[in-house]
Length: 215
Image 1 (cartoon, helix red, strand yellow):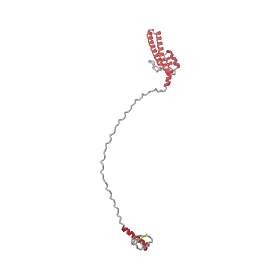
Image 2 (tube, helix red, strand yellow):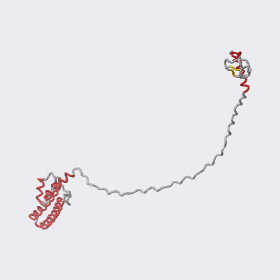
Image 3 (cartoon, one colour):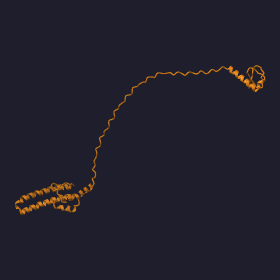
Image 4 (cartoon, helix red, strand yellow):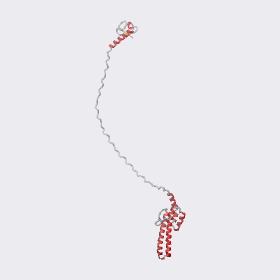
């Protein structure tokens, strides 16, 4: 691209005269001339153009201080106290106590149940010899046989003393006979008590004779 050295107008390649001012521009086609024209055109353009003023810088905005607002205090809500529910007391069900089996109790009950009849015979005079030979191994029968034998021995002893006194000591035979009768009555009462206890299956010692042990 070429420019006119006179007026600085743009000249198309191959043109010999400037279309603006009519100056001859043949010499402008050389590289040196083109650079000179280009420099002159640039200088003219720079001179014609107004200097660009620097953009004004905006001053920083001053901070706006706002007074702190007073805190708004709100009263706290009062706690609502609720009474605890009263416990529902339920009466405990009455405990039912069941009898617990005692070791050996079943065998003992069977022994009593199977030997009540023989134990009753132990309090009827000489019939005590029947359970003595047949039920000696039974604990319940042996308990009653022991008391029956003691009663039988007392009755036999009282009878013998009465007969001896009547035969050899006639003077005291009346008193001895009366005492023998009392002993016989006591033995009868004790025998009845023993029969009742044996029939009910009780281990109960008789008065007087219960503490004497033969078996």
